[in-house]
Length: 178
Image 1 (cartoon, rainbow, N blue to C red):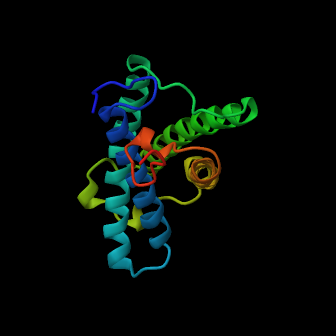
Image 2: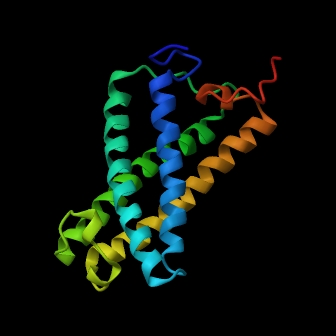
């Protein structure tokens, strides 16, 4: 597997950054939702995990954006209509913007609440709920969730109806050329 991307496939670093980001997004979604339905003690632990994971996701997104400017991009998938290509690019752009806004608004919540950056000392009671970054974080979560679902749906529909695109990101289980 190539370090850098080729015209037909993403390189191992782009794949690694994508899948780490995807796992973090799903973990953060799960932890964020779970914080609303658990006991106070567990809520504190989940909040600390959520903040730490969010900071790590921010770093991954920044590295991924920088890598996009350094790395070659594979050609668009074959059989992709111009409208679907526009949707593909729009979903990716809004997802990057959403991830940045979500992580920055999360940091804004911490800063506005005056709790500092010591993850082991932050508790849910220390977070102010009536701040603009809280509203931004909440709205952006919903937008990002929608675009993640659109991304997954688009990839799966293309995979099932048109051609194998999952191999571009290292998933060869469905390769039709076998």
